[in-house]
Image 1 (tube, rainbow, N blue to C red):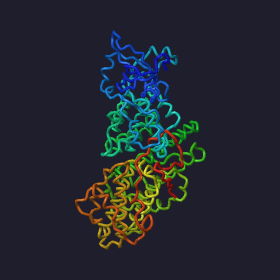
Image 2: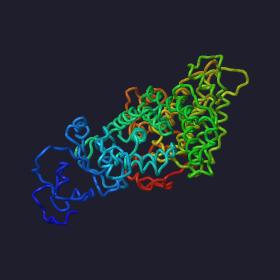
Image 3: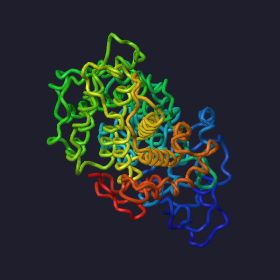
Image 4: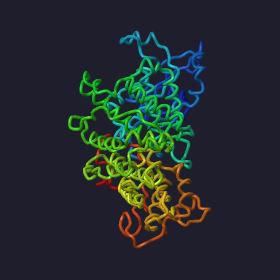
Length: 595
């Protein structure tokens, strides 16, 4: 800091505040520079003459999240990127570790411009670096990437354990130094994190940040990721990193409910598996243990993702369980690896013939899949008591997926090729949706909101499928393909479960699910509610929901989910306590691990 300047206030704004066009206290140091850890000075000559240049200044040269050294760019180079620099932020946080809610600290994701940053040097010397500067078209800044990376590691890494933490955080500090392919990977990861966790908030959330500057939305991050990906030669530079970029783009589009684009990138990722030979066990024999385990996790994550998505969208599958699973005892995180293996085991029980039949429209009688009853029986026999100690986010994924798969098998059993068969196949219980619905709502009632929301739109779709199964159960007067009347079902349990699922969908990921209106419309006759009911008067009606003497999920009285007042995402402190397995909810409620 310049010690020659007086400490008294001056008539001139300091150099940093004047360049950023923000109010300056005119002290030394001024309040803004002191808050942002900037070197405060009053040394600029305000009447300089000669050619004008555009100078990019760092946010905080002494801060670990600072940008590259100042780079002077001629005015004609700046013109092509005018639209991005017009949104320069007027403030930035000094730390990402404040333990507060995301929406209170949403300016961390303020639309900082996609900076013109220098490309990586051709040699390692500083002199060559400074003399061979040529700007990229645009790139996300380090604070934006690092903030999203920290949120990813805290909430999404347990369900996507396919990145190396240290390398990811190191590259996030210096996005200007990574290759084009690595930058596309980082941008796609940011887009997935932002969109899957719905960090934009609900329709009623505040869309402005500090000093009226707009936020960088998830779709803007996705557009930047696609742009960066298009600058790469995917075929010539194909590797695991390129595969994961396609996977993240699939997740981003899938969470936006853009299924055509999502299916394209998922097929691209699975095709890369075959091109890279990840489906062959021989590929892993020549690799060291760390690389082999990383690639095994990538393969099995694609395996699980493809099978879950294909079942929801009636698509075929390409991957088979053709290689060994990742190690548990020899891994860096045995608890996380054990939970991942349990999820893989669930989807291994679904046969390829089932997907072939679904993708054919369910009308090919010559290719009947494995009886749904046998698949359901196998799913039901999967042990869940052994999940004690597994990460909460993984427990929610495993337990709800297990129940959802049983509900899907019940649907196929009642309306698929097994319906009405009398060849000795065991029929699934008619009231199975009630059984799995109670199990699902028990999981949701015991889990933190963040553990449920972390699974994105996939969780919404699973809850919708369960709700649809419940409405089908109550609106059907006879069993399909049979004239015999259906067995009696407890209508009170059905209504209570529908109320719970609707309530969850009305506020999942901090806003109303796009599937909520559809399920509400299907449930009106079952719940006996007025046809004019909307979201505005749905929640007030939740309190006086039908009370019965029947056993409820959470015990007698009000259901466990009816008085859930927990806040949405708590990601302001995402940079702190990464990997803390015993974290508590920010509102003081102890984390409830699912037993």
